[in-house]
Image 1 (cartoon, rainbow, N blue to C red):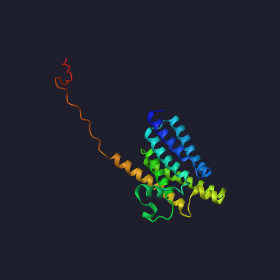
Image 2 (cartoon, one colour):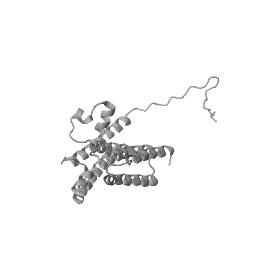
Image 3 (cartoon, rainbow, N blue to C red):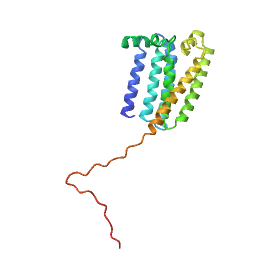
Image 4 (cartoon, rainbow, N blue to C red):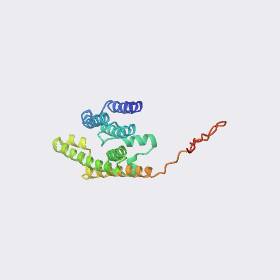
Length: 215
């Protein structure tokens, strides 16, 4: 493990510990956090098999950080209005006229963005992965709603009464993937600057390739 990866995992660990300080809904938070554990185990397995770059780990941990923060407040109760009121002097929901908590939209968008940045060398394949895994996750939430009690299912799924919540979540994940693919394409088209050799130091003679006289 490199020093950079150790720092990244250490910072993420601090976030996890902080979110578990006096949790208001420990059982429901544990349900959400189980997916974080699955993701970390999968990343560690892939890293052991093929190796992952530090940049790939960082993008994955950025998404998992947002998911971990959302899990503490069950997505539906993330107090971002209190945060913006304390820092900026206004409530975000009042400024945009929101009637629901939209932190889950941010997490789904960040999933598409971060996953595509992790696979930035293959943006089309990344968008396929994002759309497929988003659909599988929404099917998983449907299974949760069918198995668990209604209040427990709502605490986990966090639809907040929106019947189009799964469709919007998948659309935002795809939008995040498109944004990441566009950024990668723009960065890939930037011309590379040719390397300029430094001038010879004063008092030294430039090297001249030796010429072998013809025999």
